[in-house]
Image (cartoon, rainbow over all chains, first blue to last red; front, top):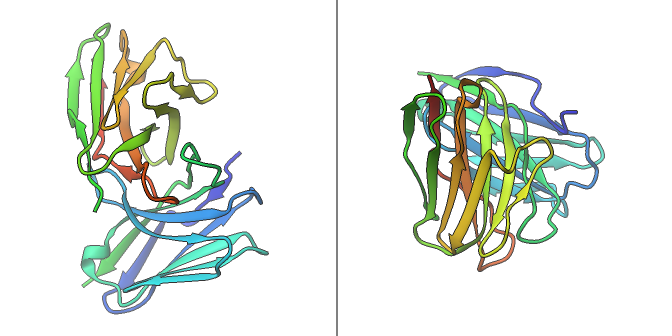
Length: 114
Length: 117
């Protein structure tokens, strides 16, 4: 059973426009959510996170929104740049100490067109 | 930022060979390291959680005798795929969490592409 779902496998956006990447989860115990970016042949790079006590977290061009009632989060990238083209993974965890595990979605491939 | 180094990045070997993959945290102490496996177009699947100085905790369905994990120090964990077969071919990635400040994200190595002939 997929507890973290990224239902759209890909997204194509024009440079300078907004990219919106969506993620849904089913486990109501999740209280910490992260977005990672991954280039081919590299490991994921941490982008931004949000705790369940917040509904928004912003870091430069990246903003993550959390809607707990809908069990939905989204990553907004604005303005999008060609260098943002990568696979983006949504991940969730229950923060219960150092061993808290991440559950990943399947990823979304973002292509930003020049 | 936190840096995790994983070595080797690519391994091609014959069936029956044992392969060791190293994961190092370069600028922080990692009390906990994680090992993942990723199949093409799939998400990262957690294989095991490794704590320094103790036995690893394996996820359901992962053979602990097949995938040996040693977390000998606060900066090094190793994964050994024993007697590897073609079905073990995959992309293996480690991650580490800084054991100092609370609520730190996991930081990932660049992965190891394992191909068993």
